[in-house]
Image (cartoon, rainbow, N blue to C red; front, side, top):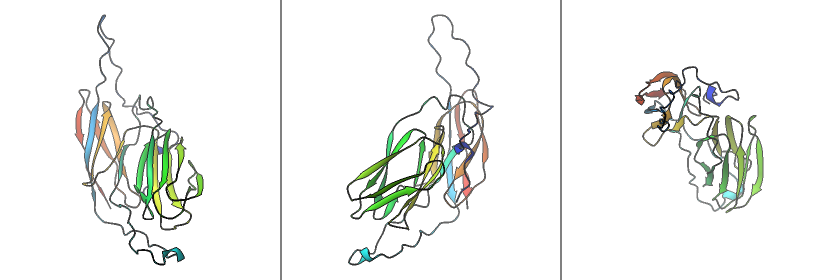
Length: 232
C-alpha cells in the first residue's frame, strides 16, 4: 500500500510559501481576483497489479463466473501542504461508491472532509460495507439489492473499505483537508487547478505502487506547471 500522504494527516500544515497578500485596491475599484495556477502532468505505471483472487461461495452455484476487476491504474496526485485559504471551502456534497458485480466502483475515491459517500448496492446480492480505519471507522450492516447507505467523512485520512460478505471486495477513500488533489484519468493524466503562487511538494499515491515526491513552483503571474511521475 502507498504511504500515508502528509496532506491527509489530521494536522495539515499551511505552506510557508503560500500566495502573498494582495495589495490594497484603489478607492472605487473592485477587489482584484486572486491569481492562481495549474499543476498538471501524467503518471506512468511501470508495472501492473493482478486483482485479488475471489473466494468461491455457495451462492455462486448457477451464477456466471465473470466478475469485474478493480481498475489498478488509478493514482491520486496531491499537494503535501495546503496553501493559505485552502480550508475556506468545506463542501457538503454527496458522491457515490457503487457496488457492481461484487466490485467497488470506483476502486479509489478522493474527497474533501465534510463529504458524504453513498454506498449503493447495484448487485443482485446482499452487501455489508465496513471500515476499520482509525480516522473514519463504520459498519453499515447487511442491506439488500437496490438499497444504499451513506457515511459522512469528517476526518482526513486513508479509509480502506471492505464487504463483510465478499472478502475479495475492497476500495480506498482518501479524505483530504484541502481541495488541491486530483485522480488520474484513463491515460494517466491529472490536473490540479486553483493553486496559489508558491513552491510546493507534490506527491503521488497508489494502493500498491509508489513514486517519489517532486517540487513544483507556481509563479506570481500564475500559469501552468508540468510535473510527471513514474510509480513502480
